[in-house]
Image (tube, rainbow, N blue to C red; front, side, top):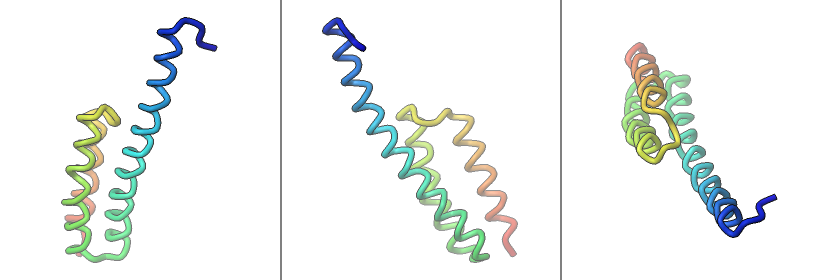
Length: 87
């Protein structure tokens, strides 16, 4: 348990950051799920549109410190290749 005033403040700040980051991660996952669903349905146009919407969200997660840059790039790359492979 936090005892000093500073450690109590840090605990409060950590709780707030956790909530913000959790919401941001959830939002990104929703965008990724929409891309996955479009790929599964086989609709190339919808998948491309969903990917175009998901890409900036992922990169925003990078700038906010939720994801590592390479992780986001890998996800975008793999989704893009899967969208491209739809016939």
